[in-house]
Length: 402
Image (tube, helix red, strand yellow):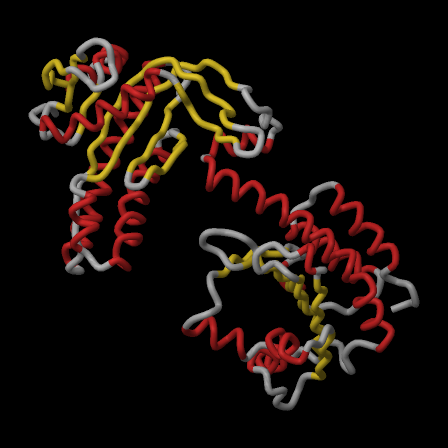
C-alpha cells in the first residue's frame, strides 16, 4: 500500500460519522475503501460495549467473502459460563490485563489464543488488534473503549507501514462508532424508562416543563392479585423475578397491540392506547387484554411446573380525555398522563378485588367498543368508586361469549 493510502479513508470516516451512518455501513465502506487503497484486508471487526437492559455490547464484523457487507452481532453478559471463558481467553482480555493498546501476531503456529488459531486454520496470516480508550469523562456504563481487529491472508502479513496507517486512522473510526452508539443508547434508555412514544417525543425535543396536549385515549391500569401476601411469603430474592415475569407478560401484550406503557408502579402498570379514534383505541385495549390472558396461562403453567408462586392480573380499562406531556419541577420531569380519567381507571382496577373479577371496564369504554366486541361484555353492576363523584356502571367480559 502506498504511503498515506488511508488518509482519504480517515477523512471519509469523519464525514460518515457526522452523517449518522450505521456502524455496519461505516465498517463495510471503510473496508471497501481501504481495500481500494491497497490494504489487504480479509477480516475486520469493531466492538463496543453498550448500555442496554439485555445486551452487554455490539460487534460489527466484516468478512471479504461475504460480498462487502458487515453484520451486527449483539452479545449478552460475558461474566459467566462459556461466554466468560471465551472472553478471558481472547486477545482483548490479555491487552486489558497488560494495559496494551496494540497487539500484532503472525498466524501459523500456536498463538496462545484459540480465536487466532482458528483464523490460522482458515488461511489467515496476520492479526492486528487495537484498543482505543476513552477519557474517564467519556465513559458511559461499561462503554470505555472501542475494540477492533484487522486480519489479512496475504503471504507475509501486514507491512509495518500498513499497521501504522491502520492504527493512525482507527481513532477517527472509533469516534464515529462511539457517536452513533451514544445516539442509539439515548434512544434505548428513554424508550425503556419513559415508554416508546414518550421516549420518541422527548428525543424529538418535547422536553419543556408544562408542555402537554389534551388527547383522547383508552387507559389501562393493572396490578397483581395478592401481591403483598405473596411477597411476604417468598424468599426476598424471588420477589424481583416474580415481578419481572408478570410485567413481561403485561408489557408484551400492551406493546404488541399498539399501546404505550407509561409507568410501572410497584406491581401496577399504567398504559395508554391512542389508536386514532376512541373505538380503535378501545379495540386495541381489549385485544391486548385477550393476549394478556393467553400469556398468563403459559407463564403460570411454567412457574407452577418450577414450583414457583403464581398469580393473576387485575385489569381496569377506561376511555377519556387526559393531558399528556411533561409534568414536574425544573429539576425532575415526568412524561405521563394526568386527569380525572387516570384516577378513575385506577379505581376501576382496584374494584376488581371487591367484585372478584379479573377485568372491569367503564361504561364509557363499553360504549366506545365496536360491535360485535361490545356484545361480548356483560354488566358487573353499578359501584361507587373512591374519589369519583358519581357511581360507575362497570362491565366485564362475558365468559359464555364466543
